[in-house]
Amino acid sequence: MIIAEIIKKAMLVGLGAQEKAKEFVEELVKAGELSKSEASTLVKEWTSKAEESTKEFDKRVKETVANVLEKLSIPTREDMEKLEKKVQALNARLKKLEGGASEE
Image 1 (cartoon, rainbow, N blue to C red):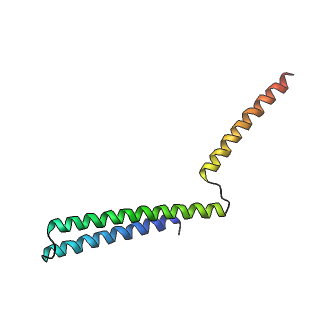
Image 2 (tube, rainbow, N blue to C red):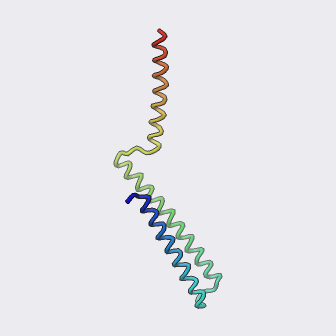
Image 3 (cartoon, one colour):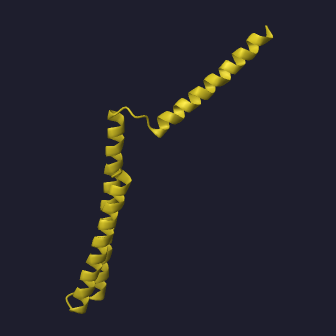
């Protein structure tokens, strides 16, 4: 299973938990245990915490993947872009040199 699939499943689980929490709060309102304003505040608070957790989870996954790639010596996209620029610069210099050598 690739990392993107794991992240997607984790986020879907989180969304499912949020829906269950909303249903639970709605039941508390129906039972008279919470007012609608209290329920609204509670749902907003839980949603905010869930979003923070998701962002933190995403950050940790990205850091972990970056660390693994670094340990495995796998170049990043940035590394590849730098190499591409160097190759282009070298090609340009080579063409210049070849052009100058044929003129002599």
